[in-house]
Length: 61
Image 1 (cartoon, one colour):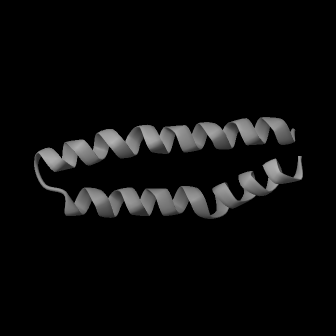
Image 2 (cartoon, one colour):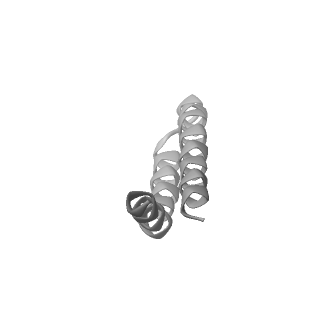
């Protein structure tokens, strides 16, 4: 239970903002087809991370 709470708190505090900043920087560096490729990789990864945070929150409550 404590590990899930720590994971959730760390993810909300640091993980989500870092992922948004990282994906923004990656999108700025990529051009053309690379931009689409970065978007297709980053978006599912971000959604999976947010889903795992929601599962951790469900275990805490």
